[in-house]
Image 1: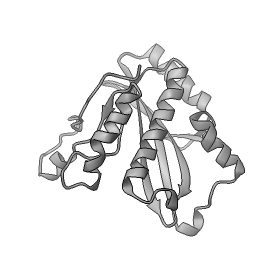
Image 2: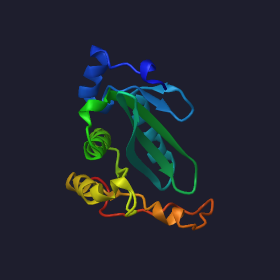
Image 3: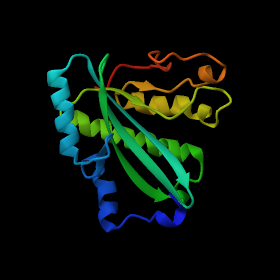
Image 4: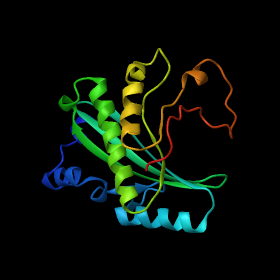
Amino acid sequence: MKDDQLTLSSERQQQQHQDGPVAWRWISGDGRRNSWMDVLSHTHLAEQTRNNVEVHVACDSAVQGRFVVFATVVCVIAKGQAGRYFYSRLIEEKRQYPVLQTRLLREVQLSLDTAEALKLEDVAVAQVHCDSNTDPGAKSTEHTRMLTGYIQSMGCMSSAPQLHHLRRGAIRTRNAPLPTLALTRGCS
């Protein structure tokens, strides 16, 4: 997306930012638009009809010109079976995030807001992921403890990817999970 294609949110979209995940426009992995109620309905159905269902929440961002695009995702995973995901995008001015730390904190805030909205609807969130790397060479490394501590302080399980294992030439098989740093138990 080019900078001129991105526009600041209208008053309605600004209100959606304030109202949180319940008001956001959600899109499923197959590209269909969904409401928050659709996300909840699918999640509850999966919990009732499948075994070993876990719900994970995460957020990532990308700087695009004068804007930052945040993508928050809810993943409904049935271990050993297929899963489904829903995501929502928010566009905000880049000047609100002058340094990486503030952008990473916003990612975690959006993830926690989403996890809290799920918890209020009796959905057990297994883990909130933060987009911070434990590789000493990564820019986000210095923020990992702060971000995972923020997630933990809100009563959620946290993880930060340890992608440096993949860069060192380790072969990742198709079914092998990405290593994570699990620090607490699910959202309470």
